[in-house]
Length: 165
Image 1: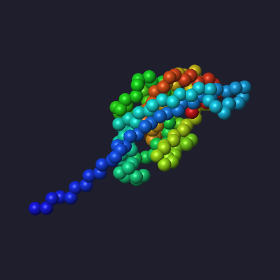
Image 2: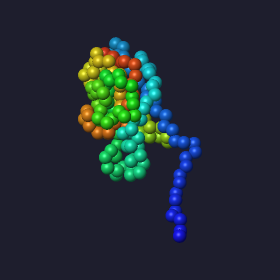
Image 3: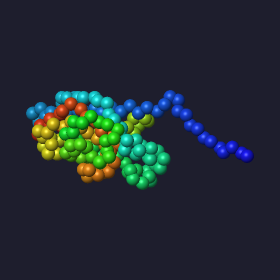
Image 4: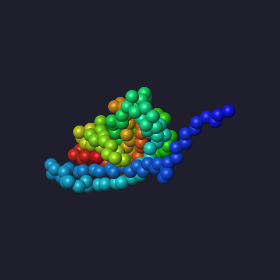
């Protein structure tokens, strides 16, 4: 009797995904913006279960993978204050989602993924709202698609001329 062929892959060191989000707010100064943000926060981010499934499926099937295989092209912001948890994403969208926009930067260089979207206070009708959460999703409409990650942070309130990045 022959023994079946087995393949075992061991990763050394183990694969660890360290995820951080930089939140920057640029406040208008008499018609112009400074080159450096007026406010900056760097917070740890959580790749939630739906995001982990998304990554595994993308690795296994590439760009042709069926849902949730479509690319992450959108960032959502909201007012939710519940700490990020692995089980977020069971209902697509943020807890208090108020706006979703296409990413202006969506790139991978070596092992670094960068996603950037800029929200304007009055331009996106989010002025005077305390923004406390953000996430990356693969659908343009609120409550749709797969959420890859979610992060909460200290409240940022947008003025008419403020830019949130």
